[in-house]
Length: 179
Image: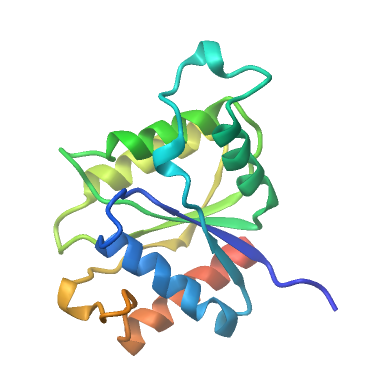
């Protein structure tokens, strides 16, 4: 029996109670029903500031861990907020550390825009640009707008809305199959 495809979940938020984290916790919860194993990356805050001079062997341990997690994944799902019209600096820093490696090249990648309607376009545009530089394979059916209101999030930090859960399962399935 072959192992279930692995989707790496990358949050662009450092806030534990963010809607982006709730989306990814929910994706992790629905993953088995979508035939996928999902793992949340939790090292965003530990990454050093990107400096091209440091993008050589030996890499900082946190960067090695990030790149290994990407390498092991079948696909990647990102949920990042928009901050000042683009991605938060800490998440852009994570993406900068992927440019010098080859782990993300041709890897199926998608994202969830959990912002209120009409918001989050700057973050999406930046993701599309930076992921293009990394050679990631953007899976269009896995790039969706899925507005999440704080009232949708249960006390356990997971979204129970069946439509949201179904859409997340569909996104995970698209990433696991590459489109």
